[in-house]
Each structure stands twice: as C-alpha cells, then as structure tokens.
Length: 66
Image (tube, rainbow, N blue to C red):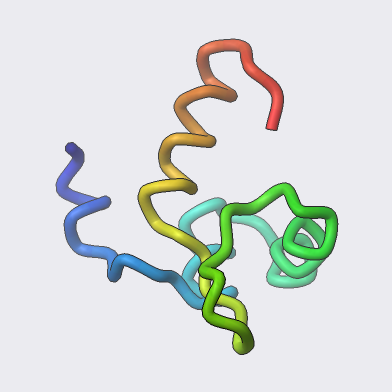
C-alpha cells in the first residue's frame, strides 16, 4: 500500500478526490452521477471510498474499464 494512500482518509470529499485524480471537481461530480466512482452509501455530502478508488485506478492501469 502506498504512503500517499495511507495518508488519505477512508472516505474522500469531492475536493480530495479531484486532487488525487488531478481533475476538476466538476468531473468528480459528473463521475459520481454516472456511477463511475465508488461512493459511500451514507448519503450526502458524497464521500468517495478511498480503497475503491485505488482499486478502480489499478484496474484501469491493467487495461480494465471503469
């Protein structure tokens, strides 16, 4: 597990997610609406599951589709 991952909370805000992915926050909200980011089932404000985000990134790097 990377040091960067360990320093992040288990559930990320949209702002934190945008920073990790290096994308605009509007992209994060768009991907949440499309169901393409793993969010916490605990309602709003949206929280992105850190471990799910990193799993998704690994599968994309391995040639998978998110």
